[in-house]
Amino acid sequence: MTTTAASPTTYTTTVKSPIGRLTLAWRDGALTGLHMEEQRHATSGDPGWVRDDDRFDDVTEQLRAYFAGERSAFDVPIRFVGTPFQVEVWSALCDIPFGETISYAELARRVGRPGAFRAVGGANGRNPVAIIVPCHRVVAADGTLGGYGGGLDRKRWLLDLEGASGRWTAGA
Image 1 (cartoon, helix red, strand yellow):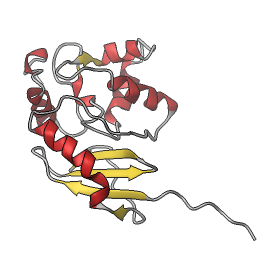
Image 2 (cartoon, one colour; image 1 turned 90 degrees about the vertical axis):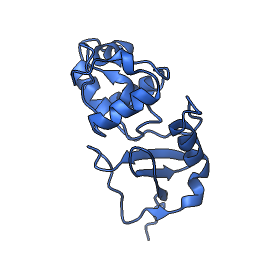
Image 3 (cartoon, helix red, strand yellow; image 1 turned 180 degrees about the vertical axis):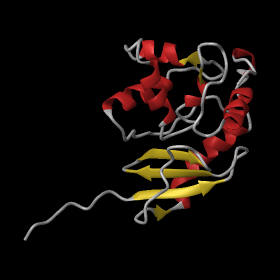
Image 4 (cartoon, rainbow, N blue to C red; image 1 turned 135 degrees about the vertical axis):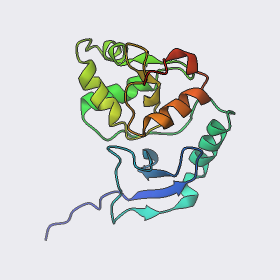
């Protein structure tokens, strides 16, 4: 007889926010996903996911405070699920201060791959924990918004909330 270890349970909830409904995922004691409605590259969930709204009380309170302009940093355990390169990029995103923006080229430089700004942009766009891991703070080198998996209107809204409006141009 062969036995296999049970795969860890992923818990989920959906919360309302000023930028639409957010789906949160939690596994092994850490947040593994924060996705917006109609977000590119979002995990759509799995039939094995278990709804558990109470598990997310701390995360949802921190998000509420952030959206109310009362919080500028998050204290949430995060577990990245991706390639080593993606995890390196996502980790570097966490070092971009609230209210500041950097270019994709600068982010590539920070991860030690100055010529790989397109690959860095691709990893940035696949960030599984949006908002808390601030991929919205990365803009194009020419000062325009560049892209955003959650849509440019949401990116503008988040940057405005953080007071970073003057750090990108309205051309995108």
